[in-house]
Length: 158
Image 1 (tube, one colour):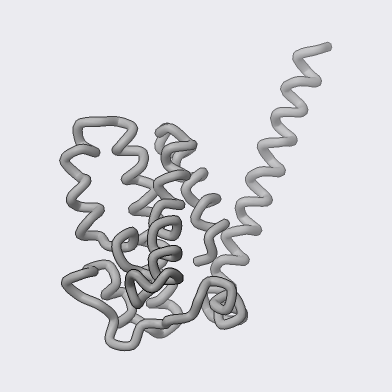
Image 2 (image 1 turned 90 degrees about the vertical axis):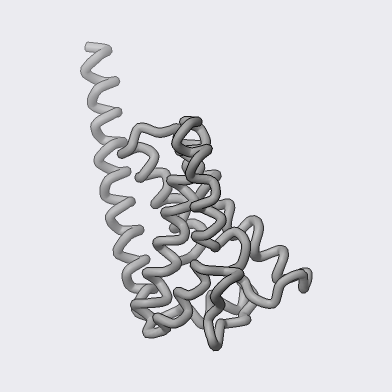
């Protein structure tokens, strides 16, 4: 999934779960904010490493259990990992979901495409169409919320 979709999905998840919206969204951004620079700097050779590892997410679980803000962060982080795993599976690259076990497992032939170039690779893939659908649903929901808010303000002033 593309970065913006992770943020929108996390916002919806934060709203639904009644967790701190900014913290859930920050958690969803975390994997890419960590892994993309590490790969571009050559520290790791894949774009899904430390931040995309479910093993590291599980290591945070005891803190998430005890601290609500860490729980919200982990919720966003987990949503990012789930969406990325879904993305590679529906695009026919199920082996790439092995990124979830990094550093113990790595995909046999991971994509090593920088984020900008990845966008063009991603266009017209199956998950591209799922992502378009997610954005359309988000727009419809947002329009509905805006309409409801405007009506509430208008009715409250009468």
